[in-house]
Structure formats: structure tokens, C-alpha cells
Image (cartoon, rainbow, N blue to C red; front, side):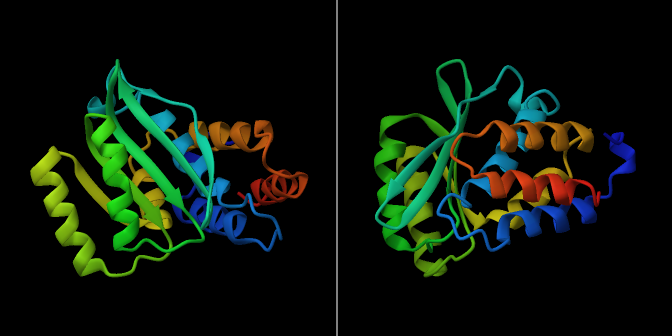
Length: 191
């Protein structure tokens, strides 16, 4: 494994993009960007004061009518600091935003991230997010999964820690198929 300063952020972006969007012909490929973001947050909880004394809760895979989605949260004690809901293959629209109100109602959440590759009705979503913030004090952030991963990777002190954590998550995940793991090992050699 290389040291952190031997990794190039742009190369990592390219390799992750290739890993996420390779034609696997499976329904669990949505899990790959979720695992990447999870690995990033595992790095950040020990590096950024916002996450001081926080823990990244285990990733949950949920099968919905729109396909597989992944959820996880960072917590400080019993308080949910951030909640992440990742939908790789289904668009985010106003109905999606309305559905998260139930989750926000159950927990005191500082920030709720809703991430996908396809966001629709953004003007209506922004208005509804403003209403949620006014009612619950929870900031709802709707964004693309790849831009979010790119932003967060820039914050990590040790890119080698990220590569190690992501590699372990991919290799140890029981829902991923052999093809996902083999593809990551192949791409890892190009870094």
C-alpha cells in the first residue's frame, strides 16, 4: 500500500467512478458509493472537530420499490449528527423529500444527506427543505453522490487510510458479488 502523499486525488476519483459504474449486471452495485462514503466518514470522525466523539453506525441496505438504497448515520452518543440516505439508481424528487420527514421526525438530526445521481424538481425540493429546517431545525442536503465523495475526499488527511478502509469494506461485504471485489482489486493496481 502506498503512503497517503503518493496517491493522487484525481486518480482516486477515476478509479472509484470506474468501480461504481462498471457494468456488473447486479442489483447491489448501489452499495459501492455507499461504502466509499462510509469509509470516508470513518476517516473523518478522527480528523475533524465536527465529528469529535462521533461514531459511524453500521450501513443498512434497504430494498424499496425503487430499488436498493443504503442508509447510515454518524452519532455522538445517542444524538444523530448526520443521516445519509443514498439512492444510486432512482431519482430524488419531491416525494422522496417528503418521505424523509418521517425519519427526521423520529430522531433529532442535525443534517440529513440525500444523495443520488439524479435530482429532479430542485426548486420544489429546496423550498420543502427550507420548510423542514424551519419546523425541525434539521438541514436537508440534496446532492449527487460523486460530488459529495469528491468534496469529502479532499478533507481526509490520509488517502491511504481511505483506500485501506474502502478495500476492507468491499472485501468483507456479504452482499457484494465476487465480480465487485475482483474489479476493485484490478483497479487498485492502477493507483
